[in-house]
Length: 191
Ligand code: 5GP
Image 1: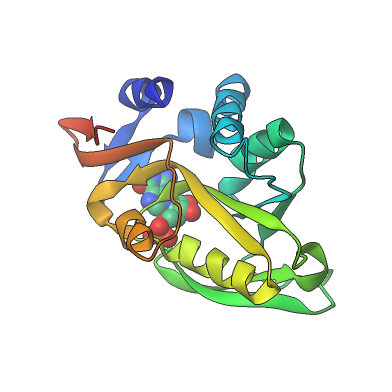
Image 2: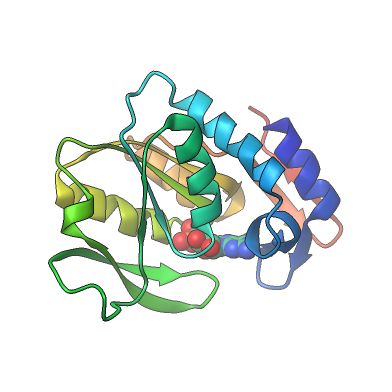
């Protein structure tokens, strides 16, 4: 998505530890209009796929997942990283290592929110090593639903999580793929 690449070049900052900061439009201050455009792009990608649900993970995936679901006309379900007191029934769970927090989470989704007849697209803000997606894919598989594909706004291609999943036959359609980044500059994968 050309507009996203331009936005990353204009507003993104490369931090230590291979972290791209895009807090000014995606991770802390939300550019509602721009996130809406990303939602439309995701809806276009899956326009022929009869998607019934978007699945994401708290917190940063929720905004873009909401935008995509609004355009598609389906609900969003998000995995929580902690079991809270208001989750009291059966849950699907999977282990996922957090790239930004450098610790392991047990991510959970109540079983009542996913159905074996669902056709699910997983949406998240970033794809780095692929651990968050692997955990979410495990949850989809446990539910018996069909995984249509996965879309992250920004894939860091140099961390290879996306390509490993593509090699397994999973449809990964990122909106922008960064091939290289350093404080001196960012280059995108040509498609
Ligand atoms: P993965 O599980 O693919 O290694 O990492 C994806 C998750 O880590 C995303 O849910 C995202 O929240 C976070 N993440 C990974 N890389 C970055 C980054 O460069 N910047 C930000 N803001 N979050 C990232």
